[in-house]
Image (cartoon, rainbow, N blue to C red):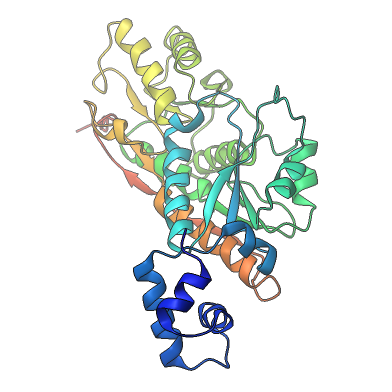
Length: 340
């Protein structure tokens, strides 16, 4: 490893001057700083991370709390793209990211907060978790800078998808295509996302003068194709089945589409389908899925930017909720049944 002493010899200056130049001290001339840094780069010098952390009280490491109850892990289409964008932005700003151990059977028995303190994280992003978990509450109430994604806590920065507008845009489009018998296989989990989408669904149809039938509302876990298959099969057996079925997410919609096809029905000629999220696969199948495409790149990028702002400038960073809109992908899975 290249040391300060090696750089000192190559530059012909003292070790103290090298240290001050690399740490941008004001009593070292600009020319000397540039020369020292240039030679340090040529020699392949890299400051010791542990020593830097002790000196600056910073680790340049961000913790990521991601606990998906469906055990999708990083195969979760939506959050994997959000976290990839978060990672790229954090790394551009000189930060590394480390996952906080969310396994309930973890051997170290550390709470989320204990793990964050043990690792010396400068901040934590909470991307997917049971937000009512006491361990999450403990982390939220700590002094560690935290940004949440798709959930809002008092006095914490939150980056959230515009689920209300997304559902409104989707339902309005389905209505404009002539559908009045609209079913919704919605999320089973009692989360802020689920509640926002359900409220928007009811509110939009009420504004359009459409009655929401109880039998058309079915709860099913997110990203669960088997449960979505079962829910769809039940909807198709109704005496007066819906003409369009909305799903909590695109992945769940695949299960619904399988049930429809097993019944010998065509999409969208016999029954229409709409998803949510705009995952890549949904935009490659036939028929192209009607869905809301979430701006995962912006969500991840903004979350990283705001967390780093909070780390670097805790007193001057505004604690706010930032809403990121998605876009309607009309696709081909919702038929126009308006009378000619």
